Length: 371
Image (tube, rainbow, N blue to C red; front, top):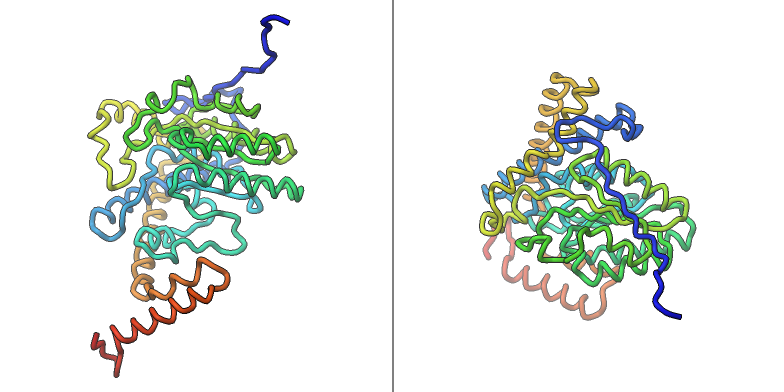
């Protein structure tokens, strides 16, 4: 009887290993071999340079609207690097660097942002879901996959990404609750980039952190410096190991920043100050990691220069290949082929009618279009 204290564990950690000058805390440095360091750096650099190239292409009218990732490369690469090929990757719409590391081609990305459904095709042996634009909807998909993996005792881990804005959606809370109740092997990566389009984090929640929302679902959680790839890697390694041994899900809040616009249809100058942006540019995850690798002699100025040349060549070849492919794509009848395994009689009739219309509207005789 009476009023008594509840026995609830409220302890949450914040992890930072690599400071803004590229200097690490020796006792906290994760054990990463040189090959993996260079691989992670390559994909961080690829993500940044490809992002810059896509922005130029969009401004030239050669691709449509897209969401830049610059500033968030460490949160993506430091986490996805822990996944095996047999694990599941469930992105939102701002994980280009992670998607590339998982094997998505740049040509595929460029096709998608030109409106071709061929840009969403994923090889059957690749356990990745396509990007999901509706905010937080992919969290439910990840939990469903995680429940199935746990039920089958397959040893698979599921990793899903979302932004701070997603934590204001019901799907986030339903997903985390279900993941915890069913002890699913899901790692939730929240990229807290401070802005849900034009809504700052302070207007989304009164919580001091986003990671504390894990407490409501009795789930492991940790907040990390999302611009510190070593901290992201260390926290994610713990979460992946926890999930793989059957000890349930984890919420990781990566505190980072979107230095560019929400999408190329957005003007961030209307709702945030340039001083704020510049203060975060000083914490650039790519510069920080580069300095660390140079100090460790894992990277050299010569290697850096060669790597930039190689990546820029890759990007230009991808652009040329995608633009060549687009000349042979775009049959309207393709829209019927990727929604259902077999078409209903109604859709079969619609497809037939569209084919007839296209033949009538654009008849081809002797190689000439008389439409």
